[in-house]
Image (cartoon, rainbow over all chains, first blue to last red):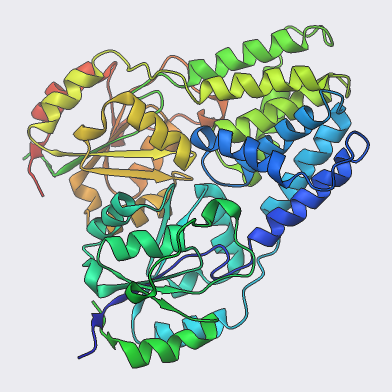
Amino acid sequence: MKPEIDIIAFDADDTLWVNEPFYQDAERKLEEVLRRYIDVEQITEDLYEVESKNLSLFGYGTKGFTISMIETAIELSVGKITAGEIQEIIEIGKRMMQNPIELLPGVRRALTELDQNVDLMLLTKGDLFDQESKIARSGLSHFFKYVEIVSEKDEPTYLGVFDKYHIKPARLLMVGNSLKSDILPIVGVGAHAVHIPCETTWVHEKMAEPLSRKQHFELGEIGELPRFVEETYQLERA
Amino acid sequence: MKPEIDIIAFDADDTLWVNEPFYQDAERKLEEVLRRYIDVEQITEDLYEVESKNLSLFGYGTKGFTISMIETAIELSVGKITAGEIQEIIEIGKRMMQNPIELLPGVRRALTELDQNVDLMLLTKGDLFDQESKIARSGLSHFFKYVEIVSEKDEPTYLGVFDKYHIKPARLLMVGNSLKSDILPIVGVGAHAVHIPCETTWVHEKMAEPLSRKQHFELGEIGELPRFVEETYQLERA
């Protein structure tokens, strides 16, 4: 017998729309600003180190990332970077906050099909203002019965959200690109999970140990989701 | 007959704990950094102008405020501020993110008394990560059955939150220090409101037109709230 599902929750960044490539693009632009001062090829490691140190104070999102870019620039230029160049870095951050949202291929069609038979939820981690702005710019908000933005995706957070909406974990399917955030804790609380890997994944989301494939499914792209869901689950509306 | 209430919602910043004075203190520290470059007495207006311009990109909170402080410094120093001084400004912001939370007088006692008879909610505007961190540091989180952090406090947002928890507006009392955010939209959606003014209110929260006092109550301090609630409402648990 197929398991009964009455809600499908989606991660947003790099599941529904392009995100990480914009961060990598910002990093390339930061390297251009810093070219006068340093001769390293890539600043990825330095920037990641500053970001990691700041994570417990800033959380995720572009505002914290912007401050981390500034700190990295001050550090790598040994304090020589000018105020004008720091303003350029701020502008890199501000442009990220206004980027048009680029949906991943097949997203709109998959949501349209699934929306006909089951309730959909957007369940994303990050900066509240950032994410609300991206959801608005994505043009997808009408698909989602519930939208939840959380500061961390771990088991207690998921349980808190499910409790809030009186959702039974066993009746929820989560879809996302991050094994660490979208799959492992979801399997941990007894919900269903579909992993759709993304070409570019932030190093912070990468896992040292791969998960056993037994507890979740993996699809190549979101376009396969409606058929997979139809074949695998019994859909109900709560 | 007294109106029946089954939930009391509290604003957080400058209602439960000190907030705005920390921003004003940061502003004084920014002035010290800028003293080498400018001879104005106060930078309040310049900083507020930069903040207001950035609000639609950053939303509320200390990370956006930190970037606005940096931009103000670059502007007022005509690009002369050094990287070292910008790092000092970043440190001012980081210290704000770690400040111990200073509860306003009578808060713990009022929550303890009210918690015995009615469900309490924390309903605050701001940066998600900032606010979660402050709630954790405040030591008050166990009082609240629900915690909601929103990016703006307007009528649609309040209605969305009430809908999420199946709360009838007429059965909710909101308590806060900002007429603009905590009182006016609450009265607008048909809920009850108690205004507890705070000595220091951010200019952004100030209203040009005072509200008519007929639709809400005003108390001098939160210590008066339990008695006021007892005399004015019939409390129930939902």
